Length: 490
Image (cartoon, rainbow, N blue to C red; front, side, top):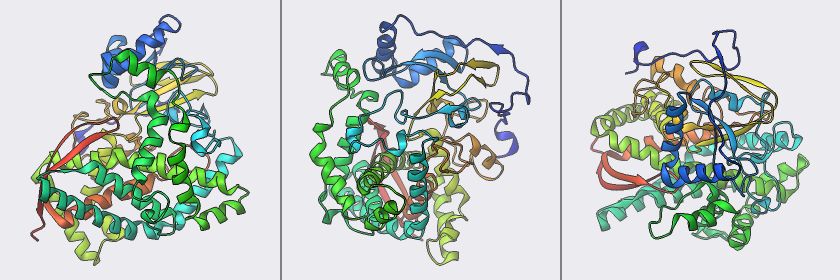
């Protein structure tokens, strides 16, 4: 169990520098020679060091969690690769302070994919918080999710039941079961049914290919941030194809239009509401395709396998505790309800710890609206107006001055007094203790994703006592394969 002395408490001084007087320092680091420096750093990031090695080596070199460097993709995908990097839990929240920073055009990193991928529209994710269109679209997202709240549990339970059937069948026939495609099918099926009035995506223009279409559509947009790791492809060739120039929309246009048409013909109520707000039906639909496909499905694609990975590797002791907590709460409530789920602190802690260890979106990029003083644990630094600020969350959320054994998965970390640490969980482009509003850039589906993670754990341990998995890296997230499943005995 988490106790008062099982972690460190650190003062957040990013907004109130008078709380703790810290020395002012120059931001260390440099950008190297024009163009050459950006390319060298890009090769270090992708081919020489990897993302974690890239940031950790520079943090060690400069003896600072705040420093200057180039980040990918650089030329010619991004106009500017020069950033100030933040790698600690204290300075990181400046990335969410919309009064001091602007996130317009920086949804994916230091670059913006072509609006062609979204019907020619600049969708909500790329809009700044001062844009009236952002207020309208974000408000529509939030009101829609509120209206659909009662459908979350029944739709997810139905979708995940199909997933378990497939998982057991494959494990029985092959001896192992590759979880990721099953998880992807679950995610797409749930999101489509949620936004499309319960309609089965198989009965639309996407057929059974929904997840594959979204994967291709997202990959072409995120290619500048991805390395395939193919040994038979020379690094310079992959770098030229994936990282140097944007990949064209026409490669996915036909499939994307099938996806768009499936949503457009199936979400009449939402599009009617959008029209009342003064939005064009096609613009609203493209925004919901982005919300469901890029934001939500893309996040679940990383989150669900990570959740199973960490629980699986924790072993039978944690499995037994989870099963006991879940079954007792469900029995008392007479079924899987929100009230029952709220009585499962271990389940909740496991979900938050997964989001801390493996945040689905690792990069955050903003531009300073004005000169800003930013502080880490040791010092304060001046970031000048219009400079880009870049956060690499997998390092920042493992800050050893905030979390004890920060690199280790601790299922109990956020139980009881440990809940005070939730303000340092940033996966949703904001603090976990904050809420998405029309005036910020926090993920509108923040609470939904957390609930679905908890539901996945609940449904799993209502059916099974324990399981074994093996895992490895993927382009996005972890590859998880089930080796065994033991059905519930009580």
